Image (cartoon, rainbow, N blue to C red; front, side):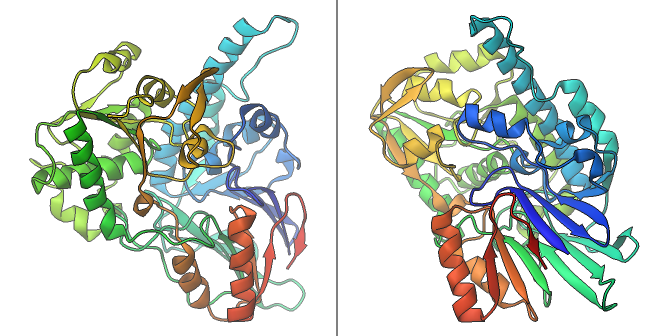
Length: 464
């Protein structure tokens, strides 16, 4: 067996790992790289393996940095099956189309700006490509074992990260000694007690583990503090007469925020007449998928989900669909909450809201998710006094609040517990983490658990 990472190695985007075993090539995730646009675009246009040689793919979840290159994979020759949960396919049917639309729009914009019209400006893939690739998807339920190839079976387990997210359990018969080896790929692993979805599955034993390390050396504030802290942020901003601007991933984080805000309204901990705007057509469409898959909810949200009391539809909530409706928010007078994509502030309507609100000290920018290196969101988190938006510099006068308890990624303690509970591990592979997070995590696993640990490097294959 051999594992090679072609993305999310020494970084947190572009998840893409190739497992070669028993003469088969199995791809685990196929995500878009995110970060500096020119660099990301170059990386996203090049496969460092032949897509036509991939026999099958298993998709952990629908986040674009894990699923976003599937249309391009198919376009470049992949003819296998993409296995995932039903919810993940439903979410991808929306998210991949949105990704294609953004690429098509960016290509048109770039074509107008470039002086040299001889240089072709094309999206990595089109809306037609995104729609076409869905025929290669095959959905499987959680906790049921399926045959992938002779001697290779797989089971999807709850990852507790986002709706439909899974960890991949592969049982592989070794052609040399005839014994079965268990290989686990976590994808992105969540935290216990996250709202809406169930907790991550706990494995009892495995031979090999490939796990994310996004927060391999950091702890989050307790989940229980997230909603009360959000209430404090909202109330003090209201007192200043300001707006709360929340850059949020359209998928999962926005739905968690809506649910949390609805709970605060029910408990009368924030004003019941506070306007709430979801300025992301993508988030609006994805919320319909959440309402379709009630079977994946945890017990807590099931108690709140009633015919006359939908957790995702507080009466103050307004969805802005058109560009004109979005622009009108610039002229809204008085306190309100604006939740807008994208989470890392690199694209979408959030940049307009930041441009129009970040210089006003009455306002608050509430960060509720991970910001990758070299993104606009990371610059805000790092406290840069000036930031560039649409090629203009703006002073950061608004209050910036980091609400880490909303993170959907396992933190250092979660990862320690998860790994230490797996018996029989021969080797651990760390991916999806920057070096300041993955290196300390590797040291802990080696020293405290006595398990050989490899921090995966891009394009460097490791024999199992």
